[in-house]
Length: 123
Image (cartoon, rainbow, N blue to C red; front, top):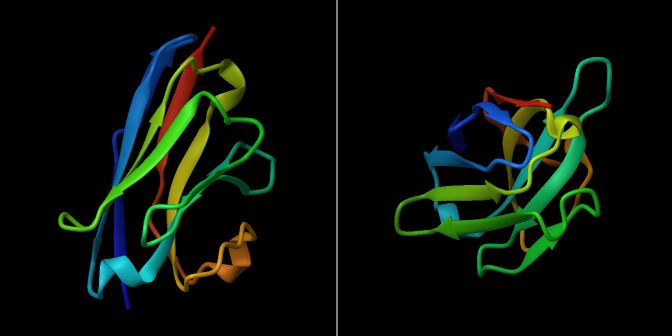
């Protein structure tokens, strides 16, 4: 079992940047595909970005070119750097983990979740 704790959310003006972090514990971090999802009020949870244990990355079209996912396996931490933020990026951002080498972007297939961190982008 892996436990996840996100940090780094907050209030930022449109065009600004935030870096979210997710610290993992409880299992061998490098065995896990890590992902970020987000959920705005009244909307379904949606995929943002994912990174394999070896560092391969994948992004949703909505954030491609504005976000960078990375991981530090020595620190058991995954990050997402979000630039050029827009008001429509406002959501609760969740870190998720899946013990696999295969990319999936469907939330139910991730068995481990953090508590979420709020990102609010003002116009």
